[in-house]
Image (tube, rainbow, N blue to C red; front, side, top):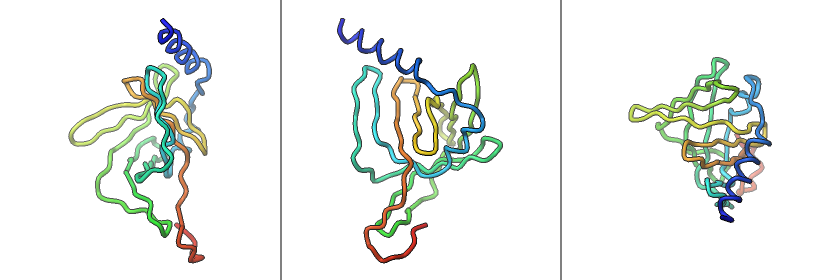
Length: 147
């Protein structure tokens, strides 16, 4: 019974505090994102202190683009490969969605919040992914400007 009330509380919290996403907000998705926590549908959290892989989004003014997984390097650059997912942003029923597609599958995630510093995506299993804007890491201290 206690778990039911916890779940309902979290569900109402999501609905009550949910940001209304407008087309102008979509430009904030562009860039490097580091996952900071995952909130599962039963309310438990998984915190991430450090990530070996970031998500890089690039979406144009027509709401089309891609997402790539990138690995930060010690010199402030990112290592990438040729793998990516096509993305498109869709607005429906006063909500915004990221639609992903690869040659093998298609799926969607609802955009719960997006700003210059935060991105929250909710998948169909009701798992919420909380991202923070990532910045390049330069541990070498060589004085060079990172890209």
